[in-house]
Length: 202
Ligand code: OGA
Ligand code: MN
Image 1 (cartoon, rainbow, N blue to C red):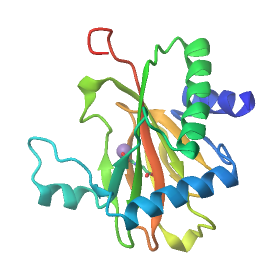
Image 2: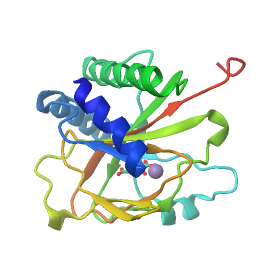
Image 3: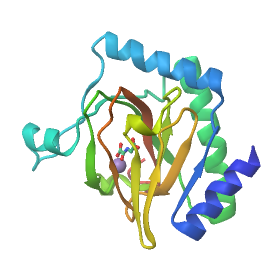
Image 4: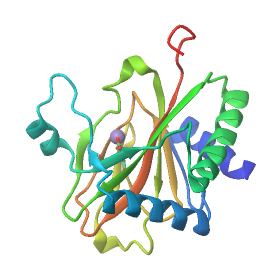
C-alpha cells in the first residue's frame, strides 16, 4: 500500500510524474468500468464542458471524450472505495510533501474509437486550485496496437504510458503538458484533480 504511495511521490520528485500499475485491484476496476458503461448506456456521459472562449466545434477538435462527474456526496460503493484509496494517498502526500490538498474532483471519461485529446495542460480551471492530475485506467487487456496512449511531455523528453486496467498516473496539473493518442477501441478511465482551495472558496 504505502509502497505504491511512495513510488508515486518519488516519481514526481525525480521524473516529474509518478505511475503505479495495479493501484486499484481487478474487482474494483471491473465495478468502476461497469459503472461507466451503465452511465454511457443511460446517456449520462456528455462532451466535456466548454469554456467561455471555446465553441463546441473547437472543443471537439481538441478532445473527443465523453465525461460524467463522480458525485462525491453520493458515491456508489465502488466510487466510495475509489475515493477512499485516493483519500489515503492524499493524506500520505500532505504528510510527506506539505502539499495542503483539501479537495478532489473526478470524472469518468469514455473515448470511443478514433477519439483523442490533443496536447494540453490541465490548467483551464486554474482558479479552482488544480494542483495534481490523477488518471486511472479501466481497460482490460489493452494491447500496444490499441493506441490510446497517454504521452507526457517532460523536460527530459516524452514518456508514453499504456492505459491498462488498474494503472494510475500522477503529475503536476499546471506543469506537465500531455496528450491522449487516438484510441483504436473504446478507452475508459477516471481522470481527476487534487485541489488546494483557499478557505474562502471552500
Ligand atoms: C484529461 C487527460 C489523460 C488520459 O482528462 O485531462 O489528460 O490518459 N486524460 O486519459
Ligand atoms: Mn489532461
